[in-house]
Length: 125
Image (cartoon, rainbow, N blue to C red):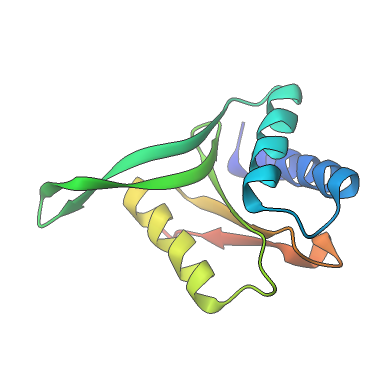
């Protein structure tokens, strides 16, 4: 399955979660609900993955965490904030570069219109 096909299925799951729960909850609630829905939809998904960080070709003694990784291809970074800032997009772009993945979705569930709050971030590998 391509990144675009995975992204399409993820968007459908996001809509289901948002329509059921609405805005204003903690990020962790949306993460658990989306994890459940994506599993239910038959996608391979892992949450809160600890990944090593390399600097100067040395693996550091600290990791960073991805919210969700779908089909080992698409990273989902979830937020529940008043508004997304440019740093949120840069954060996801950094995650994509560190993992050598091509596509990430930045989603803010604390909004009036979820359609306007799902953003594709592409790593030009």
